[in-house]
Image (cartoon, rainbow, N blue to C red):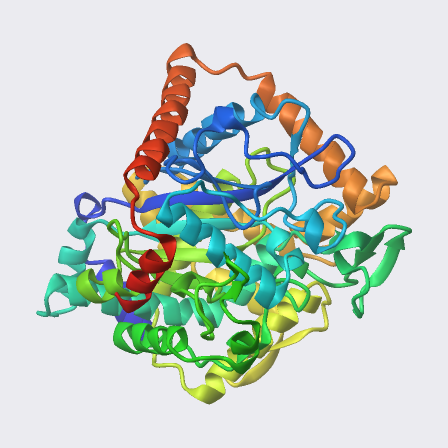
Length: 518
């Protein structure tokens, strides 16, 4: 029962609890002064996108990704993220770092440059993978940005948790089993994150040019979902037909990796018709349902840090799950760094409660029901009459949200008693206040209200707030020590890329063949 696992956790003493380990990967577009996607190369001052440990690019050359190291506290993680933002902002020259998940103005596929990673074989592999995404799904949906939140628990916690649960498996296997326990409950509850943190209810008309959709006209160049929380996570965002054929199992590690592996080795007729080359140019890694594991879009992933040349599946099979990656979070456009302290603390509480609550295996019928509920909140979560299936009953979305958050209150109180603070109670109260009364203050509603009150559409409002964030960050001078550290990372990353390129002698075709065989 749920209470039994919570009661086991109450057997911990404050000295047994070492907290959470956490990190963030935050994406965002570079745009020009008019709000159009940047056509310039990755700024050289930011180092090599291939080898820099904290500043890289995602799909597009214009889509930056900022990565924090792992921290044991929220303040340290957010300070690191802010430092990286400050360094980026002061090296963008006349460009702006876009604050929203849905992109700026674009002009079709060709306006979205595919990321370049140099001439080394690993750099070319990254580029070809992105070219594969282009020929499979088009580039437009790859211009969307989000926040990925990474969370794990220290081994000191796992050893104590294994002791109180009476488990005698190898620690590696126990951790993987428990992380999948958490993931199953995340699947059951992730709709709540879309309600509380979805912040992309509108988009620029250029994103849907020539596309059939059911959005409402906001102004002459903006479309919006009347009750939408996250267009990024809806049908206009990350989705594709081939992956809809997959039945990726999130119940245990071995079935998860086996199903992904099958997808990487199962040809898809439409991709076979495209082929892997166009003349001498490689345009996709293979013709399978997935080129690599990372192509599978999901709201959460079990992760393990890979070694050089190692594939994610191989790392998971060899050493088990190391951390959880939450992938469904929109950028918070009201925050200069895209995420807030209260959000991070709530995510910690939410994910721990997923671990401590009963989590039976998810069957096919429940899986379909969970997917439907998630899609409903993404598309119309601000509609107070939306009903969700909870415990076999249909419950209004606001009541379901309040009930779920109320169940987390005892855990928030326990963590605060151990830490001598109000951290988790405050974070929980902040989220509960968003769905109280008739006028919900969820981010998706705030975005539409801000656009309306400013008289600006999506492009111009986001450009304005992005420029405000840029001014805020540029008014916070970096200390000489921090600036020197970032400048050194940029130089060292460029040196590392050059060394890789100088030592690569194998033709790329042979490298790719060996990679596919491994």
